[in-house]
Image (cartoon, rainbow, N blue to C red; front, side, top):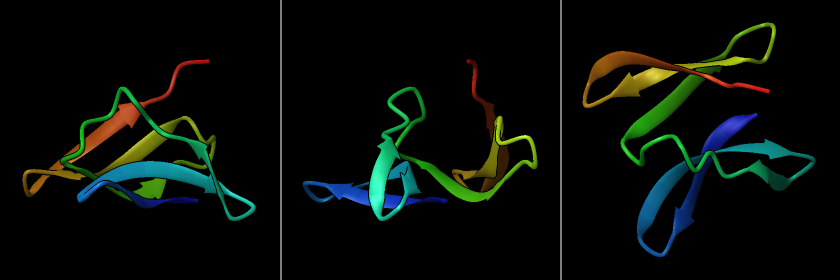
Length: 59
């Protein structure tokens, strides 16, 4: 599940699994908000600075 976790006072996009952060998405900027994850679980879809944006995860 995609979501947000606060690091100090800064919200960060993260991936959650079983109630814990599974991936801190270090390569994704703080300004990205996850809205969906592709069916193959390789692309994060959302927005950044009020513009559509996506990030592709590499294995």
